[in-house]
Amino acid sequence: MYQVFHSQIIIQILTSDLKNRLVAQARAEGFSNARITRPDAIPDVPARLDAFLDAGYHGQMAWMEDRKVWRGSPNALWPEARSVVMLAESYTPDVDPLEKLTNCDIGNISIYAQGKDYHDIVKKRLKRLAGWLVSEGGGEVKVFVDTAPVAEKPLGQAAGLGWQGKHTNLVSRDTGNWMFLGVVFTTLELEPDPAEVDHCGNCTRCLDICPTKAFIAPYKMDARRCISYLTIEHKGPVDLELRRGIGNHIYGCDDCLAACPWNKFAVQASDMRYAAKDDLGAPRLTDLVGLSDLAFRKKFSGSPIKRIGRDRFIRNVLYAIGNTQDPTYLPLVAPLATDLDPTVAEAAEWALKQIELA
Image (cartoon, rainbow, N blue to C red; front, side, top):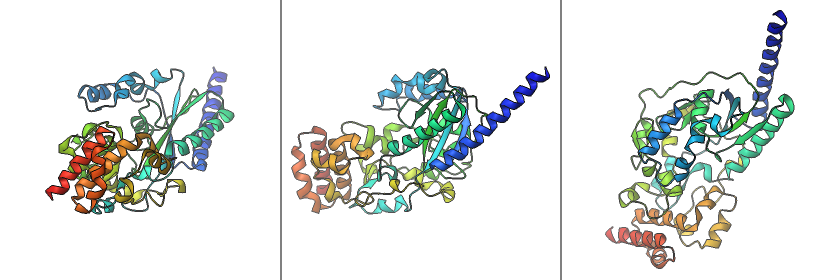
């Protein structure tokens, strides 16, 4: 009996030491924080996900419905996993993105998309960290960074990285809400960290600032009204009632993130590759609206923007131009009314009408 008890203590000590070294290694790799949780730590997610999907809030994102079993349960995605390592990496901007909203002649690109594609940067770090874990502790691993049906934000809260704020994004008292999330599934048994609790209080800044009123209630979002969804995921014309609210957002939206008061504790981005490229921090609409497919792919090579394609991007730019109601854009917009892509042509017609109404 004593030998069994003694062996358990030794295992606990060794596991605790491995966890401490893992966290230190994660920080050495450039992650802001690292916490541990269990695959079964988010039992409420399947019901929440079903309610979201049943209401149709996912819009055209059919992949959410197709993979809901995996997204709702890490155990379903990889039954062999025993621990989940959750990692946060800061991409806090050095400027206030809200300041660009008043300059109608520039396109507002989401902060995360102004530099190198974070998927590539974070995944390389995850693979190195996972390799270190295997070499030091054994077991098997799988890594994910927004590339698989993993409920990163609920897992992040379960691990203690932060809590899901009223804007549904993860918020941390230590790092604010400008963070990428990385995930390592492992077959090793690691001691879980305590979950974080909600610290939003009575604050509603993130809800109040949304131009398209995408939040139907605190902690509940209708993605079909979210500017990030509309400018990235939505194919075809955007509903007329939402176009004015899009303003000069041409790829994504950071309004709710930027409004969060917890950002006063945000840490600066640790990798300069997240910094905005010279021509993406505040690109002029006049420089974007005439991009051909070839020019678009060349300009956004290595950027997450490239994945939406030229047609959807030009559609977004035309909405932004229409919202300026500035007649100086007429010569640039008029030729696009006969664009081969019907969505681009319709967006050009709409922009022309907005300018004429001014």
